[in-house]
Amino acid sequence: MVSLDLSYNLLSGGIPSNLSQLDFLSFFNVSYNNLSGVIPMSPHLRTFVEGSYLGNPNLCGVVAGKGCSSHKWRPKNQYEELMRDEEDDKINGYVDTFYWSFVASYLMVLEILLGLVMLLFVNSRWRGI
Image (cartoon, rainbow, N blue to C red):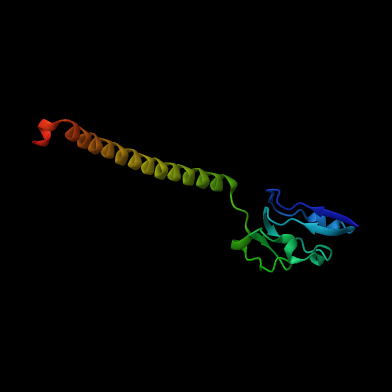
């Protein structure tokens, strides 16, 4: 009994076709990675349950329960994905900056108003008493 569990390893790319030659595997799990492409069409790799491939949205094949039309499983350009992630981080940074500047402005206005109230409370001439 030999097992290969590569789940939750942040692996990306396709499943190598030479894995289908490992006939001695009794357990195989590559779930919850970032794998893409077609699951190799070997009789041995088809014997593993669908759960062995879960969490890989760009993986397709008979075992994964998804058909392999070209637009569904084509690996994404890693550079484009990285640039998109950086752009998202940049936008999120701008949103965070906006919120923090709004909070700081609100607190400054609140301080000024509290200062005026305190000044009016302490200085009886300004209160008109």
